[in-house]
Length: 114
Length: 112
Image (cartoon, rainbow over all chains, first blue to last red; front, top):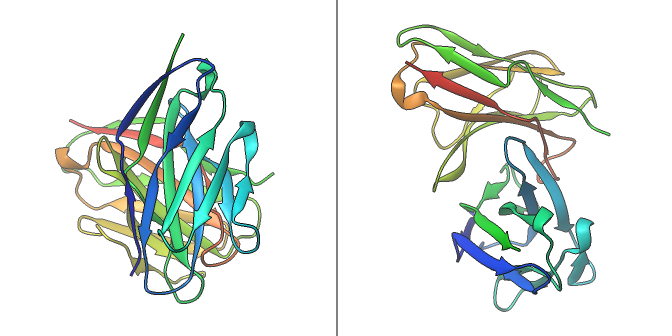
């Protein structure tokens, strides 16, 4: 079985500052990894995904994440945040094979301060 | 773009009522999922379905059932609503197991 730990429940950051949202996963098999964003009163929207290939993945809205297999991490980064990035961010993992759906972390609330 | 439509954005029901939450997707996806989202707990999987007329229990199926009579529609049923089922309910679909899921906008359900 897979599990996901998002190490910070809340991250406040000033506008135009860089941000990193941390995600660690646990799995005995190879995995796919995802980051989703949820704006207030909306469903989840896919930010980026790692399926295979380059470990640095670029997503929408200037976000990127790096897959680190040895540290079982998939941290999300943005070099300069905007007020509009205020939202909740979810990391998710699934096994490459087998009959298992995505497993989500508990989320990190990013608050961008003007 | 994939469209996942949940029938209601907000719903208020009374304890003991039978409640139906409907979800429709328009991309012929094989897989559909129901989650509930609560503050501090993230998304918890209630039920999922990998094919028509097929269902599997997720992490918290107690008090819920589902129906998938057609590929595009996945219904969540609260057999006898209770106050602890007050939550945000999210439906999702995906084309293949382990692939990105596409989410609806959610139904905020209040049980009084």
